[in-house]
Image (cartoon, rainbow, N blue to C red; front, side, top):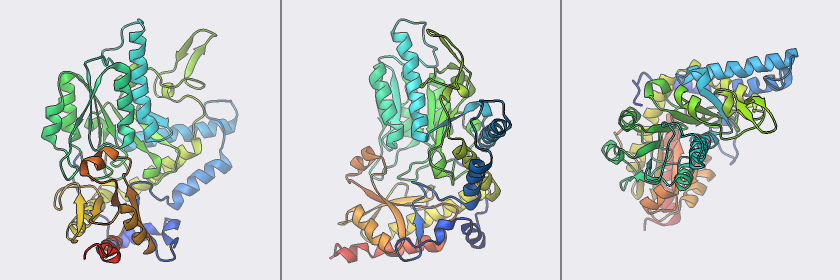
Length: 434
């Protein structure tokens, strides 16, 4: 989704926000920390840490179980968090289910689709047409997907006999809207894409993909890990059928993810996992399940992490998602333009001047990404190196790894410039430019 960009965060406001993040004052390498790995895991403000601690020490109890006061208070916190997170992404509370992380949420969708079609293959009642995936059908992804949004669909294709197809990227790791629309056929049953690429920063044309999917009756599953934390996202407006995002990438705790299932899909899908809390009646041979969202929440949930995630959403809303988006778009352009101007450094993804998220991945000629990372780390710069859980993309680019700098609301222009200055000296340090 391309949002209307408003004024970003002033330098003064960013510096005030940074005071909320204790870890940013640390010096793990003996020099001031420049944290440019928020695309992997963001840092947490005191407000989130305090909210989770307060729940653990004042209201901790099993939710939706027991009649005592503490259990009722915990349940109120639990469902209030669901309401707040649903509002944050433009969804109904009944469309929001908890998962361990986004990977777990995406697996839940694929496993539930497999379960629905397994029942059909075993001669049970015909599967709902919305869920039907048969031999000869197609599942469409892109060549740039994170493994979390690729492996579940590989397995679903194997189990159903469907064909996994992908939208190819060019030499910069970019795929086009035209190529995506051309790949959607009458046989397409699922389209699974990242809203924002975690490697290239490409922002997908979700509305156009959804319109094309509707024309052929396909489901659209959105990996929203790199969009929900960084830009306004309205899942109803986008029209996707399912989406997933992780708490630890949006100022929240680890161990909690969110699965969005549009009302119709949530009502049709069978649960991927079964157990306590998601049933109405159980006998020794039969079981009946609760409606969504509880149908997809088997067992005890990480309630304190859910409370922490709700506090993170409150924090982001107080800062303002349009302002965060504008701030990061400016930093993304600064990263892209600066990296592209350094001799011997190859920028991956959209070219400078094209819209991209607030991250940039690069290849340094003659220097392995892990060595680049060590040079940066010695200067206090925490950046990601590796294949970023996107091996097919890196294989297409002809490299084993890239170096990625990813910004967030607490990132300053000075930190971006420190990264670029350090990056410009890498080849000379290793004698690669001689």
